[in-house]
Image 1: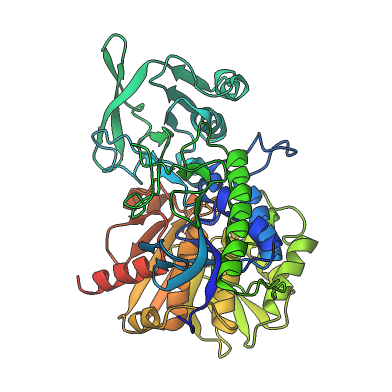
Image 2: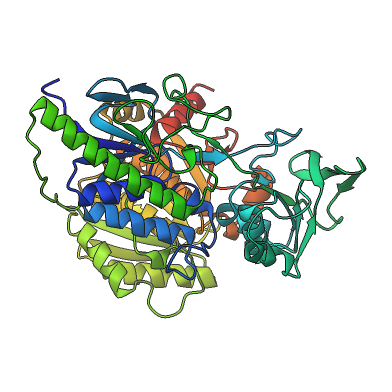
Length: 553
């Protein structure tokens, strides 16, 4: 094992517990790695507004996690994307198996918990076609519709209030006799004139063809059922589910003590029953699962891990060295730009604030090739916005140029931004709409992969991408969705590697006809050739597998 890098600590999960642990471990100069299987920030990024984080009156959930991520990076902590599928947690050196093997003297498990499903008839069938779990991702797709929120806790009350900015009306369905959250949180729903609450009520089933057409509910006191159907002039409605979580403890419960629901048991130092293995955040047995308690857990777990690793090194006669702060983390899938890009608003003035310009210029300084941004215009107001965006974007670096071209009469998705290589040839990478909000990350990563060093990728996965035949990929997004950019960037990275592949981002708010044709009510919505829509976050490996399957059909 002499040739293997052994970290002082590896943290599994990059939610508030994992990032807090990373901050404390990095500040203690421990050699630290964070492994995240999905979205950096965890469940908090699905939260519209965080109201109860100390010293912060209110903040967007994604913005809060971006700040934590940046703070961890400032202490030299690296974050990688991988799915850990196997654990060897006994002994002085722990081994974690994913796409790669990782070695550590201590492990902090902060994998969190995922939204719990109710498993009522129709729930799985209509996921992405009316059933949703993330208001910030999917809320705008239900503009002007009736929305039901299932649940009676913090998330249900807060998200019901948030969804009224889109919905015609929101009805909360709670099986309890009252909200189970703090009164002030409950008041956001109870005092909102666009929200009704039905207590002692449960959802029974949903039915429909392409979209939700009927929902049946039951009063659990009387047993009486009632149903909802949209007005004849409305096509469908939405159901958002917030009924708690289930811990991400797959592969862990065989060796680690846990309760009957799978949550890990720890002591006050966040130690599990195995030496050198700690757990923090929503994955542990605890009376309150909130951002602040997760952050506290992360701090305690990292401090306990530091004490454990110091004692271990002394026992093994390994020098306890202070790690120098490494250089800034390279651009990768975890790159997030300034918070100003998180929520798209009506454009006024400049597109890029000074802080954001500084971030972008530091990335573009690594470019080595020219890129031309070509706008296909239809003379609409949105086309004017895209032209303004592109002109200002191209002022950021000498490697950029732009063209404005009238679109052909048979073009469907306009306006569109296409990236051309330094020979002015199409690259297959395009954006239908203005790539602002979270999608600015997609544009930056596409350019970085096309004209810069590019993101690292497993050689075996690159070989599989190069072997793919010609494929057209379209990714339907909402600019408020924090999951979408990773899917867009991964597909467009594939287009860079294989010129037979094209990958286009589509802002679904601009193309209701596509939403109707494909029955899309959730994002990201990945469309590969003529295959069924793939909903939700996808890793690069999952997307390549889907392309391989599409190629043989």
